[in-house]
Image (cartoon, rainbow, N blue to C red; front, side, top):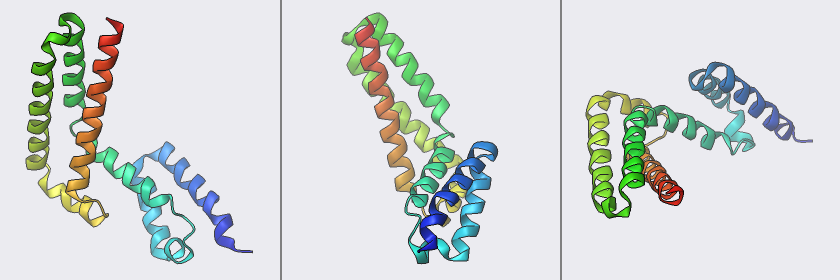
Length: 150
């Protein structure tokens, strides 16, 4: 019997419970320790962990401009709710421009932190692209909700 099949759910449960109790930093440290032992890559038993690691790192990055983007999205939805779809073009371009400004500000202020993400396997393109997609999808979702409630 292959022991890596038994280690897979146990390792995932331990990492998930550490993430719930202590946050992303400690669970990433444990993952790096397990990865350095060689069990994860040699046995190919834990295919979900790189995705889990990427999601935790992306969440850490996205937290730097989520509050500002969320406020702009909520204000845009409120304007659409009050004024109707006649202001959609203005709101759309306002959201695009403010998101670009936020991304530029994050890139300039946190430029030294990108070495951390690159060393852990995430490119800046991936970070900004996924953040932009999530911002846009949140924006569209809020606008759909605002127009359907109206």
